[in-house]
Length: 339
Image (cartoon, rainbow, N blue to C red; front, side):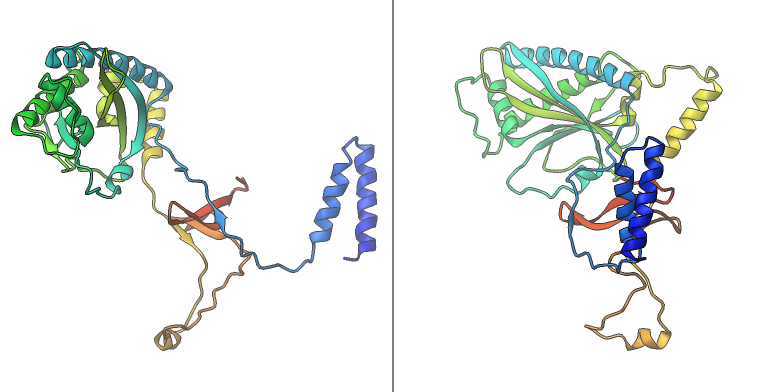
């Protein structure tokens, strides 16, 4: 298309837009589109740096349940402070620092740190393997052990191994905190394991499981320094505490059942494949392939990568990297939405 034709069409489009009270910017957009028609594709070697965050963060609990969870953690902090006060014979304050939801993959894929030797007290409902744990970092364990011995003036040495007595006292305190975590509800009574473990991860997790992490600080009322620990438990095991299953069987409406089925479907894991391109080779060509040979694919460098689900293309995007791994920055879906 010549510049003259493009300009004429631009002027005609501009006139129509003016008559229809459409802003002049429409004419400029049309001219830009016309100018792009017939242009040759250019190679795009730009490397996209994807944002450092999970595109699908876990949202297991509803807004109402999160409110109940906040109330629960407030009561948990008060009850935990009483336990510390009783064990250490000094008034303590406990503050819940954060309540977050995570995929199990965040903990399963964490590399082991040889310099840190945290303590774990697993707990469960008495049936099956443990469903949660109390995590006590090495430095916190040393501080708690010192306080349990009543030596408030001594400086905790996080680099040393706890004595058998200190480890026993720490295990008793951790067990008491697990009992507090169960709360008054008998529907979700957690029982601590027989002994506290060091550096031995006690939970069997899968990457798609959702976990709730409750981090808290504990400190003497007359001290400025605090020590941190956390509870980590499967979200499904907190349902009884938060009231998700309070509705009796037979009282569910059709909308409730439909919502439950939809929620279950939304939680199902699906395998998505990112396909750069493909090609067809003969058997002879396959057998002749050697190191450093170059195989020409059926896609130009300016065409996007496909995300394929069950043999069907669902999204398009550009190659990227995130957290040291390959990634795809999604730019469009098959139904026309862009992000």
